[in-house]
Length: 236
Image (cartoon, rainbow, N blue to C red; front, side, top):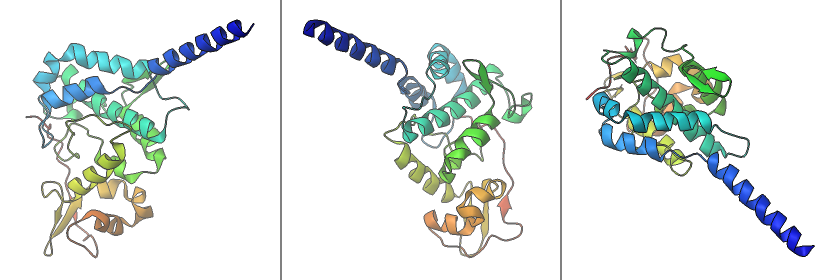
């Protein structure tokens, strides 16, 4: 009887490990694609991604087949959805390449491009209905919509292990990047991200949020202090 119990526990444990392994968030393939095709300053070799398309589609399928569960940690879920958003944007570009910017595509923000089981998601669904619900304003500096004015696409995948460090680093890098924000003692012009998502930053206190990361402290954002967004493709 004891042997039967031990065997039953062993089988149950193996089954649980197998199920868990199948659903584990693995972003190593996306990591490899990014290392090979994205520069340190976030420029993407879209033709290179197209050459690596078997790898890319393998990762994309794995996202659809291994979606977050209640057992995943907050960090695992954040990494999954941010990687999903960024890889969807890249896939939309390579599926329609060559294009000059993502807005040339048909309704890119509301196109139900990504499927998990019987449910489909658009980029807007992922950003507004999922990522913003985390109440983590720094996500705005990790998601990339294939555009020059977007926060740069990192050349490493996000994981549960690196997501917190990435949130802090990417926010700091973006705010202090003179190509995306001009913050000097004599001039202040910040990204339209701070205008579009004002309520996400310290309940609307954008200045206080910026000062947490900016090398130059500011007192206010002028009336015309937002840079026009440049949708040019972030291509090498």
